[in-house]
Image 1 (cartoon, helix red, strand yellow):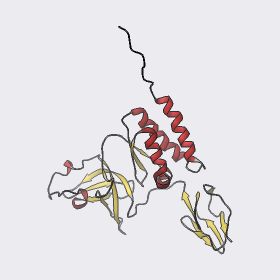
Image 2 (cartoon, rainbow, N blue to C red; image 1 turned 180 degrees about the vertical axis):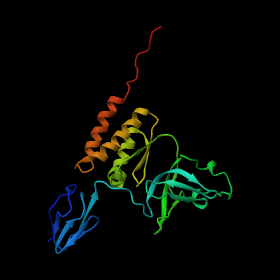
Image 3 (cartoon, rainbow, N blue to C red; image 1 turned 60 degrees about the vertical axis):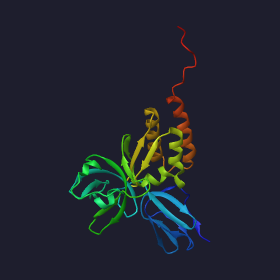
Amino acid sequence: MGKLNVKDKDIVVPGEELADGMDILPAAGTYRDGDKIIASQVGVVSTNGRLIKLIPLGGRYIPKAGDTVIGKVVNMSFSSWFINVGYAYDGVLSLKDASSEYIDRGADLTRFYNFGDYMTCKITQVTRAMNIDLTMKGPGLRKLTGGKIIKITPSKVPRVIGKQGSMINLIKDKTGCRISIGQNGLVWIQGDDPAMEKLATEAVKEIEKKSHIPGLTDKITKFLSKEAKTTTIPKETKEIKK
């Protein structure tokens, strides 16, 4: 019977023995040495059934097909837009993947996406030459208008989203903000109330800072409830007599 030598959410360093036994399987950030599973990097332990992996505490974003990212238009040609997705190479959004409607070659591309525009898009392909192809066709993929963009460590994105979206939905429910998260570490937040937009921003940063702490959902729930009380302006209940 396999034995875990660490607990879920423990922070470990390279060379640390995480588990003994052949019935526990190594995943990302770990490797097998005989019947032992060893950490290959600094990270937070994450277990799922028989699998054990490490979530890195830091590191830059490495694009891969299927990722939903938030990018910024930094250049364009007569037939495509070049999108900064936080990597050494820009992504390319072609006319055919830019919109569900037909776009004529030679059309004014700024009518659709202009320099400096942010968008939620999806990576369809990353070639060996690091050409990154993007699409705007799919649920939730759109140009982002208004609101604010903040940056977090890409490896912390799953923690901010939570299991089945539980953490990000908690923030949305408590603040009433619209939030979009890219796997490249960019987060778009838009709220009708500036105070709630600020609170949502602080909550995301709080999760990033404390991502390794157990019971984080309860802590964020208390944080949001406490801070929301201080940012809510009480309504006047008395009429002013003339």
